[in-house]
Length: 294
Image (tube, rainbow, N blue to C red; front, side):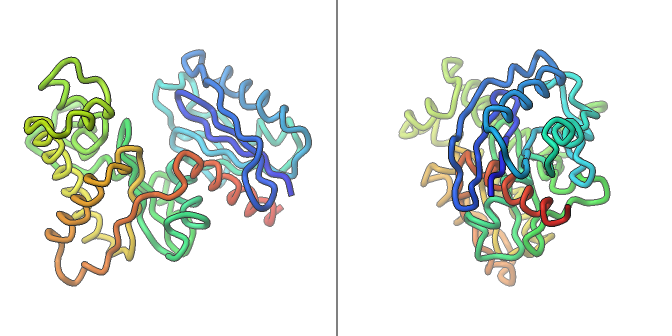
């Protein structure tokens, strides 16, 4: 079995070959996303061509994805013109093999479900904290997509209604307060020389910096308490590089447990296990499932 897999982001395209047991020949290239959708599609076809012959293709990608038909329902201007791109058809036409396409967070959640932190659970939630807050709902080892393939948009939960603004759909929402971007922005207000999370944690012993981090952890917990009480999951997987900080995970676990009802405290909060390969691993699983159908 040879399955070519890609993970398309606004900054880079990761790729590899799944041989039935492991990912091999992994590589990463710049997306050059600002050149637009046609350029990104050309890059995808070019990268796939470097893998020779294969039996199927799995693609994890930024944007909202109609996974049934394999096209991009909506994408922001990080990749201009990407909305409406029929990625599955374009790739299948070029290579003549079954192709599966899924949103990147959903693909990563599938990777965790089969090979990672969620492998012991049929049902779980996945939230990733990075530029924004991504989410996925896994039920019976499958993605719950909702009526229009957009379920799991946890970043859109309103957590600060006092900050809502007309014409700004994400104002007052979880993503604006709990993302890694929000943490860096808050730290930058304290010290304008701070531009990334590494600088924050290098100065973590400073009381002001620690206070900023602690307030940000509370923002994360506000959302987790909400989704745990809605879904009553056995497990929530937390992704994003910032969750690799032991203090963050420990405090999120402790504060969340303190703030949920006793009858919900069976929930386990775990960090994602597959790192930046989760999307590729999920894409390989999707492709295998697609190959069974065709």
